Length: 407
Image (cartoon, rainbow, N blue to C red; front, side, top):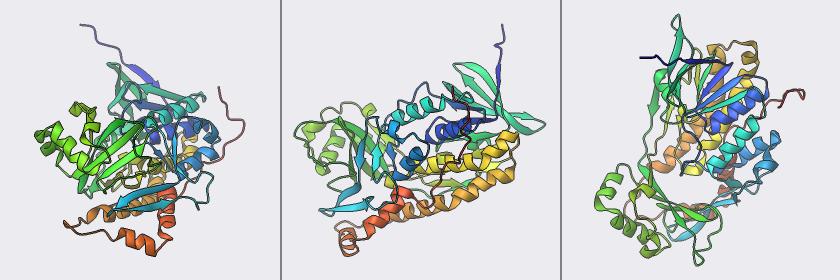
């Protein structure tokens, strides 16, 4: 029996995971002349119900990179405010109109469009390479020191030798698992069931943003369809499945602005996706030759839709801190820890707010005080707009020499 030959590649940095953090970091490193390989286990980016919000902080980074105009030519919807109906009253939760940035709105864009855009932009640099259908398996070692990764691409073995491995492979990160990086979980009381409904001419004209007649139903205007989210108690999904799809649709119809007949296009459980909400973070984001960022380092609740934008900020900080050392061929653990120190406060502050917002459960019949508070303190939506839109620490891409080579 013939043994299949193992292909071997080399790079200055190997990034595991072709999501927002991985591709943004790959773009930034390659534009500075760092030879980078990004591994993406899927053949494409076409997966539903991923984080599709680009916040003002991310749009500002795209502008600083000279990519904003081209990005906004892609189909998207804009939200200058985030709105909801709480206790029968419509309230503005966050207002972005006073932010000190160019784009004072959230752009709703399918994540696959954003990732394809980043890939196209990064591919202009000769030092960028994306390997799709390529799954991380384990680390490679030399004298007990990590020196690269072992992967499988299109069922064929692959070895990539690199002095630095960066895990950007999401909340179920294999990199952090194999690196044995300890962390802590803060739990979450609820999950979300996502599904799509085609738009119809007589649908409510809700405009842009998060809206819902009650707090446990969300509708996002995605142009040709509604992206709907039904919030459930943690672990309740198996009970819903046991009751059957028709019973689920009856539940949704009680709180959605649609009659149950409007949900007829839901004919199979496969049309629904369960988002298992979790909030966690690593104690240490790094060990020798390995760093985790984005969801691989800190999983976020969907509250505020900030996960993608924190991941992008992580990528910019990592590129700013590590690029000079990567160009010299040596990155120390001290420098990797510097990335965590830079990004730890915004991570912890954001998770603190998410835990507080999701932690208290009101008793039946107990009304929310939120509408009263927002009416009394009219500046609060602008404060929430700053926290959601810009976060607790903004990153700015480092300047590069104008002579940087582009294909």
